[in-house]
Length: 119
Image (cartoon, rainbow, N blue to C red; front, top):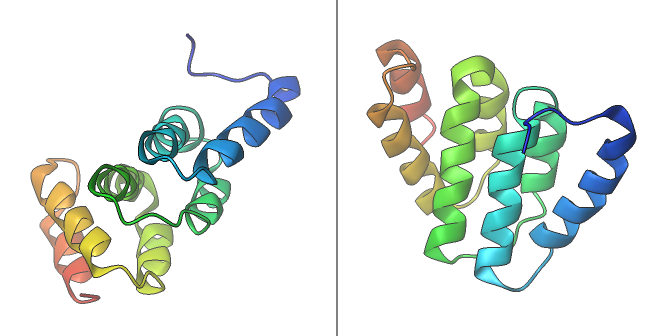
């Protein structure tokens, strides 16, 4: 499957991903977040972050996928991710995000240090 989406397909994808993120099933939510990483992170980061606010699940795999999305988005959109994370009330997700950032070779030490200050 190609990672590009035609304009006419956005509405269909939006509805599908939103339904996944509103699910009560852990792995359905995780799938929706992974689709955000795969399809939205490069072109629709504001929309992806907005949808993340709707996720309401404290299961490990959901939290880890949120951290994965945030750490991946931070490579190109660090300031937007930082603003989003400052309003995040889930310290587990923030700590997971920091760990994923530290594991990445694409995020500078300065940015990691800056992110650490919000914890």
